[in-house]
Amino acid sequence: MSEKNREAKRSARERLAEERERQKARDKKRRALIVAAAVVGVLGLAAVVGLLAANSGDDAKDTSGPLAVPKGATGKDELTLPLGKADARSTLTIWEDFRCPACKGFEDAFRSTIHDLADKGQLKVEYHLATLIDGNMGGSGSLRAANAAACAQDTGKFPAYHDVLFKNQPVETDDAFSKNDKLIDLAGQVDGLVTDSFKKCVEDGTHDKWVAKSHKAFEDAKLQGTPTVLLNGKSVFGDQKNPLTPAKLRQMVRDANKG
Image (cartoon, rainbow, N blue to C red):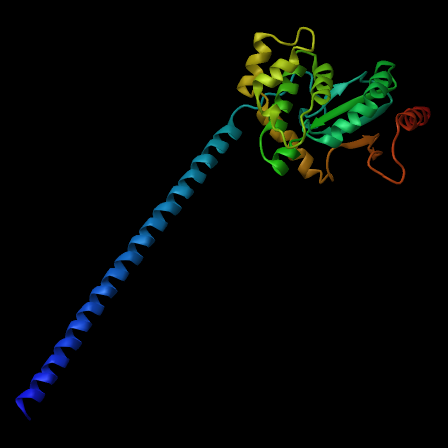
């Protein structure tokens, strides 16, 4: 073999060896990047898990604390805010969300009729609060407004404040009720409601856990939505083929009270 051929073969071997070394270096670098990415992913996952755990811990801590029931709340688990005389023969059960546009529509149409029937002792009303829109649209206006309404219940002014909230309901996509200042400002429309104790109740979220329990009852009952309106346990609102009117409600109450 000529010296020239030997040199060519040696050069080829060297080039192959060099290429192998370069490939090893590339593989090592790639493995290092993979490991680094895995570490970052694990750390990121740990951060997420930690955040979830922290939030879960907060929720657990929150849930385990005392549940403040509004004064005068009645019914199963004291989740009912009553209106009218307790001995009225007929009962209207209403599930509402203060951010719910359909609830506002119901209130605007039936408010005066319901108050009149209750004032005359012909009907007692059981209000139940839900936070459905918070879950559907995001935000906390349903919860904050419901807590404020429960704070008003503590002072015996729930019905009036309930009506003020629905009369001043923002559009569904506007989470204005999430602002405690807004809720306290609206409370100024109810004589004597805005006191230091009421403001503290609103700002501290005193009845948040009670509201959460009320919404859980709404979910457990598998109701279709808000408003849900029951007269003596029978659904009377939401049938588009036979819509409820104030006159029909009055007649239904009269008929029920005769039985």
